[in-house]
Amino acid sequence: MSLFSRSSDLPGLHGATRDLSASGKGMKRLSAGDIAVVDAPDISRGFAQRLIDAKPAAVVNTGLFSTGTIPNFGPQLLLDAGIMLVEGVGADVWLPLKDGKKGRLTDEGQLFYGEKLIASGHVLTSGDAQVAFEDAQQHLVDYMEAFFGNTIQFIHSESPLLIDGLGVPDVAHELLGKKVLVVSPGVGHKEQVKNLRHFIREYEPVIVGVDSAADSLVELGYKPDFIVGDPAGIGADALRSGARVVLPAAPDGHAVGLERIQDLGIGAMTFPSAVESATDLALLLADYHDAEIVVNAGAPVDLDSLFAQASSASPSALLARMKLGPRLVDADAIAKLYFVRGGGNLGWLWVLLGVFVLAATVIVIAGFGGQGSFTDNLIDTWNNIALTFQGLFRDLLSS
Image (tube, rainbow, N blue to C red; front, side, top):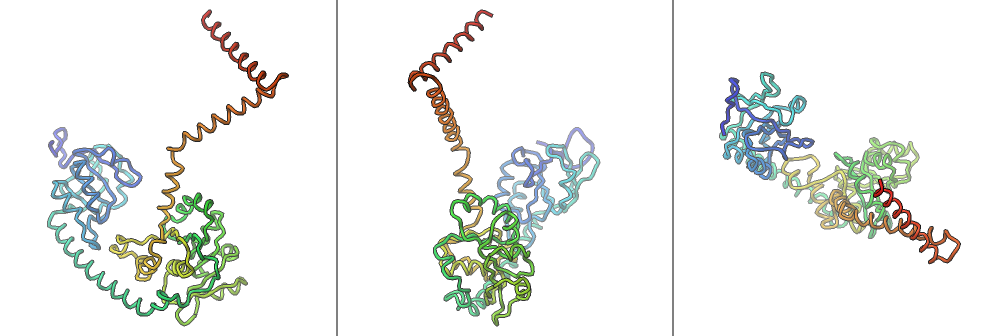
């Protein structure tokens, strides 16, 4: 297949543009010779292989194929497959982009519809990708050495907390053996809580609101049992909801926001430690008091976020989650279990139940609706229905 249009004198690579954004459907329609437009900074090897299998002529990225944070193989795989790569065109490309519309991509990294320029970026070469990979590899090594150096220092200073729970507030037996839901104010936390409604209804977990997520819980109609965080960023309604308030405090016991608590006339407990994240403190609180299972919404931490140097992937975050071990479950995992349970596979059971209920209702009404016995009334009703349909059938034949 020729990479250049024979029907146009305009230079460049011609092909249908495909919207591969999260809201687009271009991945299903992507085929050989198309121009794929993606939002994939540090594009993964897996995603790159999916693109290669579809055989597009070019991939245009709103971000950088390699940001320099992690050494990723995706860009080199695409280039080795003979696919043209253009990066850094920016998010503005989504406004004029129309999935399936014929586009033109020049050797300079400019994307056109006809003669109208809709995006422009940098053409990535194999040499560029190799240099970026090597730089990112060294950067990651340096970062991980510093990270685990800080982790060792944190363990040294906070081992009494991590091992024996020194400083953890005494909350009696409110968490012992209970299922606990810790909600943090991360991206999408409200939607996660909505998706957990069946879990919350079935198990009635102890709900812990972290920082402003306490306001989100009240807004969604839930009453938090505990609030952990700086009250300066938490609304008065949440603080006055009856939840037990836990204030993060410095190792010397000083807690920021104590004055606001006192002004509102609310009691509070302090949690002195060097841990800066209220989410990590909430997790350690649940761990020390032997919660059976802890579901965490709004604060995911995994190896990818650690490699990407996300602020949430701190030494305390890593250790708090390791402390909980198998008892810690991400909210999305719990929500998916309930989605499967209530999915379309069981829909036919509800239909069948509805049919049984309808049939039972008809039988009861017919059986008790006449002057004779229950059985005689059913027989009379059935005969009347049969005669009615027989008459309708006869009328249809005669017409």
